[in-house]
Every structure is written in structure tokens, then in C-alpha cells.
Image 1 (cartoon, rainbow, N blue to C red):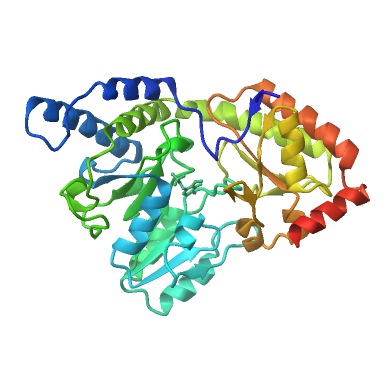
Image 2 (image 1 turned 135 degrees about the horizontal axis):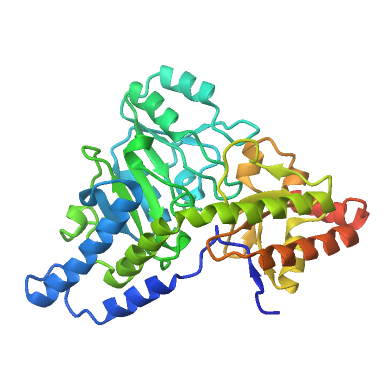
Length: 381
Ligand code: PLP
């Protein structure tokens, strides 16, 4: 069955036509941005224009934008090359933060998915000079939006620097690096309609960041290697459209809210995670009691509806969600959670397909089915 309703935008968003066009135009550019001749200068102008767009997206300076291969590299670079002697990261960070170093100290989150500010204060009080606090702006599984500005002011008062993974937030809600008060920000193009394989670290003026790829002066000496001009052009064009289309997100939130209402009406025991506080407009993490997430993902796929298991999956393998575990969700319930994520192109018909498929599956296999309870338990094990 072809995909009739793509509801997995947090995994990757469709390439925006403007990004495809910009990449196609950039393919015709001959020069290397480092070359001094006219062809090189034309390439550099395209790269600089993309850098300006990315800076504008987050209210940063173009000089602080370092193009990288994506969110994963950006997170690794900041955690490993910013000179931090300790890293304090929230328990719900993406694995590219949590696995970037062996010495990460985990900060707990509350049941609502928000960072436990009391625990942060207590840890900072024990001394945090030259430490790095890493907290994402919006969570990829639940969409929960963290109080990053407050976290940053606490961290700075204790002498720590602050990194914010804004991969899921950018293009969905306004992101202003200065208002957030962060020293480093992570972005990824493919989450906002650009190509996969490019992203950026945005560094605030004065924040240290050493080279992590050596052997050339590109990206102000921090990341050597001829720049990916084609992808950068696509990233810049996607960012421009994302900024212009932020107003569209209110409509997306209405569709998400309708989905949430109707799924809860069909399965009143279903639980929604991360909805108590501020949340991304297009993200819904919800459990279907008694039905393993994999079963749901496969059944919905057969109905032409693409969603993810609540747990992020890599290489096609689904692991128990560390995000839901950190929020104290019972593992058996967490194993029944799926993530529904929408974006600028989502329409009511997508919602209808999912709602119909959900009703059918929950009637067939819902909480009363012993067989599906066994399935759920098997996943949690
Ligand atoms: N950070 C968050 C919050 C993400 O959701 C992702 C991707 O899912 C990443 C980082 C990694 O980004 P990329 O796929 O560009 O490496």
C-alpha cells in the first residue's frame, strides 16, 4: 500500500520544492568556495547566502554558523570540542548527546517531561565552572518544550555554558538564540524540509569551539573539508520557507489536537505523554492500551499510514524509549506508545486515515485482548 498519510515528520520531513530547486541550481556551480577566481567566488556567495539564512532562523550571527553533516555531528562537536570539563545533560536528550561522551552526568526530568529544575540547581550548586549544560528545546518523541531560557540563566550564574539541541524545534516554533541565552545551538536540515546530511552548530559570540576536523581552513578552521555547497543551498532555501511558514503551525496544531481527541474517544484508556506543558504543534505521543507499538506501526503501515513507535528507532530496530522511561512511564505502557508527527504539509485527510485505522485496530486488539497484552509484555522485556 503506498503511503497515503505520512505522519512521521519528526523522523524526517519531505524535501521542500524550493530546497530541491536551490540544490539543482547549486549543482551547476563550478567553483570551490575556497578558490579566489570568479567561479570560486560564485560558490562562496551561495554558501554565504545559506549561512545568512541559517543565522536568521535562530537570530544568530552568520560568523557563528558552522555547517556540519547533521544534528548528530553538531551535538558530538559541541560536547567534545567546546572544552567542557563536565557535561550535564537531561535524561531525554537524543542519543547523539547522551552517547557523545562517556562522562555525561544525567539530569532527571519530571513526569511531565520537563527538566527537574530543583535537581539542576542542586547539581550546579556543587560547582559547575567550565561545565556544559545540554538541554534540548523540544523533545523528538513527546514534543515537550523545555524552559531553556530559565535553564540557561541558572547555568550561566554557576559559570557553566549551555548547549541546546533545537533540531526538532526549528521550523516548528520560533527559535531565538539570544532570547534563549544559549552558547551553542544544534540544527538539522532534514527536519525542516532540507536535505539529510547537513546541519549546523550555531556558536554565540565568544563561546569556545575547537577544531574537530583538521586539515583545512574551512568553517573558520573548525571543520576542515570542502563544503557541501549543494546541501547548504538546499538547507538555506528550506530555512527561508520554514521561517515564512511558521504561521502555518497553528493549523497543524489543530489537526494534531483533533487526532488526539478522536484517538482518546476511541480508546479512553489511552495515555498521552508530554502534553501537560508546552508542546510542539505537530507532535503526539500516545499509547494504545494492550497493543504493542510495533503491531500498531505495522498495522497502520498496511493502511497506508506512516507513524513511528514511541521509541526512536535506528537501523529498523525499536528499543524501549529512554524518554518515556525517564518520565517514569511503566515499561509495559511505554511499549504501547506511538509517535504521530505532523508538519506544514499535513492535512485533515491524514488525520482521518489515522483515526480510522486506530479505531479499527483498537476495536480488534485493544486493551481487552489478552493476546495483545502478551505482545506488549514481550516488547517491554
Ligand atoms: N537531535 C534530535 C532531537 C533529533 O530528533 C535528531 C534526529 O532524529 C538528531 C538530533 C540527529 O539529527 P541528524 O539526523 O541530522 O543527525
